[in-house]
Length: 191
Image 1 (spheres, helix red, strand yellow):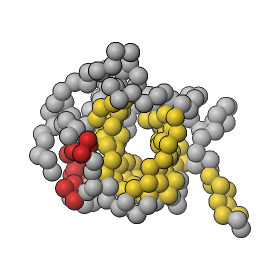
Image 2: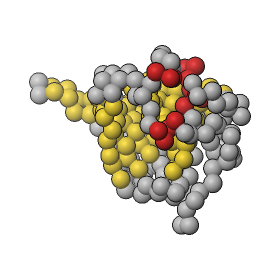
Image 3: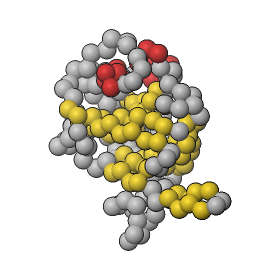
């Protein structure tokens, strides 16, 4: 661990606005088809979602990505879908006005039961990869803004990991993220 102390209390539990959708899977002799998102009356999620950006990450076993969010004025909603492999996902409500502020939601995801998570603005997301070549799809409803990009140190979730945090593979950027509550998010964006 980096030894960063979290300055605010964390509560385990479901976060307001986070949605989990188990994808319908259709199998036949050719393989499987699974739907990550459906719009309309029989849609996947309660709110329509317009994809602005769609990308994938492929990760090695024991990579920890996060915990990231994009703040105002260019905050985004994300849909995260596990395509291949297995992860433990962590979501932290950083929205001070939210009734679930400071809640940490933990969700295991694997390709045998594919699912998607809708992550509202102000909720930080990170995950530990449990299988080699795990593939994650990210859909965002707005553009990436480097000046609005932020996050929280993974030290927050270290006690919930099946491997020591210091043995995970993390980016230089993620290693430098502040502890939860250490400083309030302030965008460097001029809009």
